[in-house]
Length: 79
Image (tube, rainbow, N blue to C red; front, top):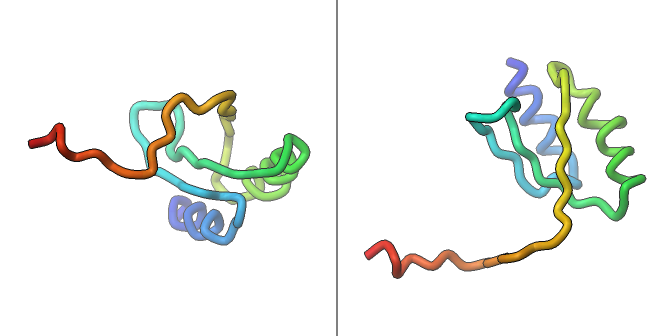
């Protein structure tokens, strides 16, 4: 139930661009958010994310620079 609650709550957050259930890390989910600045991130983190029932910890990482940012999926190498 806590996973369903988390996913449903996040689906209502306009800051969330993607949410992925993951394995192999010290986390259950990886989410990608888009905010205007660190104050907006803090508001999202403290006002929304950490208030979701079942959220016991958050590990944040920030993109400093995109090296590759493709919007198409090349499939020729799979043939």
